[in-house]
Amino acid sequence: MTRNAALKTLALLIAALMALSMFSAAMAEEFQPGPKLGDKLVRQALLYALDRENFILAQYGSTELARVGLAPISPTSWAFPDLSDLNDYAFDLDKAAALLDEAGWTVGEDGYRYNADGVKLELEWLVYEDSPWPVTLSSMAFDSWKQIGVSLLINRMDFNTVANTTQEPPPGEKMFDIYTMGFSLDADPDPSGGLFDYDAFSAGGFNASGYYNEHAQDLIKAGKLEFDQAKRAAIYQEWAKLMNEEVPTSIVAYRSEIWGVNNRVSGLDLGTYAEWADIIRDVTLEGDQILKLGETSFDGKFNPIYSDKVYDTWINKVVFESPIRTSVEGEFVPYIADYELSNENKTYTFTLKEGITFSDGVPMTSEDFYFTYTMIAHPEYTGPRLSVAMGLEGYDEYAAGTAETISGVEIIDERTISFTFKEASPANIANFVYGIAPKHIYDDGTMEGFISHNSEPVGSGPLVMTDYAPSQFILLSANENYWDPDNAVKIDGVYITMVPDESKIAALELGDLDVAMPAANIDNLNAMQAIGNIHVASYLGNGYTFMCFNTLN
View 1 (cartoon, rainbow, N blue to C red):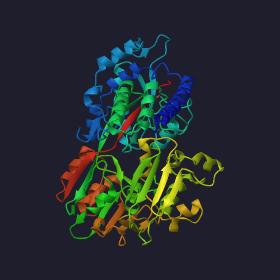
View 2: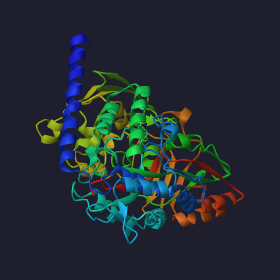
View 3: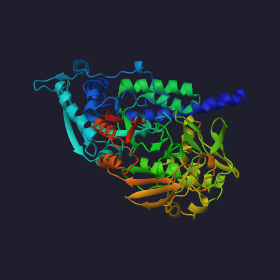
View 4: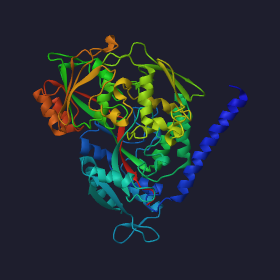
């Protein structure tokens, strides 16, 4: 690249960043912080007055099963900050009271706090009862916050009502003070579109807090442009430390996952970023060669670009194969395709490995790759992966109907295909973790035809679905035509039964299940450890529970 070209590119990037920042800033001016939760001191005080370590002991029974949350990045991530740089907000009612005094909220004759305008520090917390932990946490807050003069109203409802109330309304119409929920993270620490990104403060967006910080937004955007991992880590660590201080949304806890595993099972190497296709490949069994797995439910979206639940995604990971996958270290690595970056890091050129075939024996080509990933841009697509297509060059023209194809996607030859994005970002590679479907089976020219195969998936993965009864069971069998025999599964298959969470441990003890993941708490852990033919596998999950403050109130 010439010096002039480099300067031009840099100028364009700076202009783009300035335009995005100006848009966010203009929107932020419309919604100003409120007198209660808009004040950082109030948010910090509430956190100091919430004994989260005691909550973990009450809810999970052990600090080995959950950790107090400090920053909106998983501790398992390469981008997590040094613990010494983070405030743990250890339970301290005196410090909480002092912060409220500093913020101008003084205690009245009734024991509650009021500001200079006579407004009472009263907050409403939306609590869903589908899971016990929000009830436990809010009840503890009710007692401790009262001691520092904060009045808390707990409004109990179901999960969907909480989600709809906090996320669906447009900005300025989100009627809540506090809500709690859980959030799953991707392997890449990029928070774009998530709980802390102001650009996601929208109708249907994840960020309901209304909090705006120009420096935080600049860091998020800088992280999307930096390809050097060490420099990216430094950016996200600075951002995480800022969010730890500002706490527009507080990370309540990082939770572990616990699995009961029958001793007849060997080679089940579970972990935070472990891919199920890799896990299943290494499993060996004594006796019956069908692994019996217990899960809670499936939506039946056994389609790589439509699944939005963890259990459906599990099926997709073993039936389909993707260009890219996650390594055990939480990094994206080539899987069934190698790739090269070009065009100032905006173009990814993939080359499929030789000899890949689908389970029906038909070879996989770049036509299948093109078909699967461009179906996301189909006018009738209603799945959760639209962002994959929206970032591509030519998507806007295709979506508007002024172009018949997406100019940013080009088939080069039978095994080679390129994708060009509007903007360079290291997070773009995460768009290629979804499996490739065979065009000759899924393509009848309509979206209806494409999704008609959701309950009869066909891919190139090590397992094939051979039987399925909704809400009852799924039978996956070894792919006899698997293209890579050296990495084929060693067992005959996997039988997945729908089992309520409260019944999983009994099923493990009876031998009805080989593997199950009950809720992570000390009672379940002790119960599984007491079963003679069961061992327990545990690891920290890639996600957290959180408490969101509506900073506009």
